[in-house]
Amino acid sequence: MFPTHFAFSSTFILGLAGLAFHRTHLLSALLCLEGMMLSLYIALSLWTLQLSSANFAASPMILLAFSACEASVGLALLVATARTHGTDRLQNLNLLQC
Image (cartoon, rainbow, N blue to C red; front, side, top):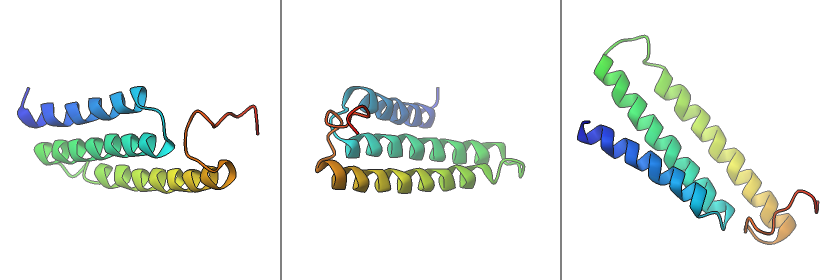
């Protein structure tokens, strides 16, 4: 395994572990998701450069567009929950109480 492959796989695993084990605030969960998406973007970009084919050239840009949409939806949800519940703690968010 090359050091770059190890670096990107470890950043993805760290983001996944942070999402799984550190779920106190919605903002920290969104930051872990964003870190995972950025590591996937960089890994896909390097994979496209290594293949040097034009067939996969648009795929990193599509992933980056989806990542930007995910970040904007997450920020909108964060603002909505902060307005309605007064906090972004995930323990206070219960769908049965709404």
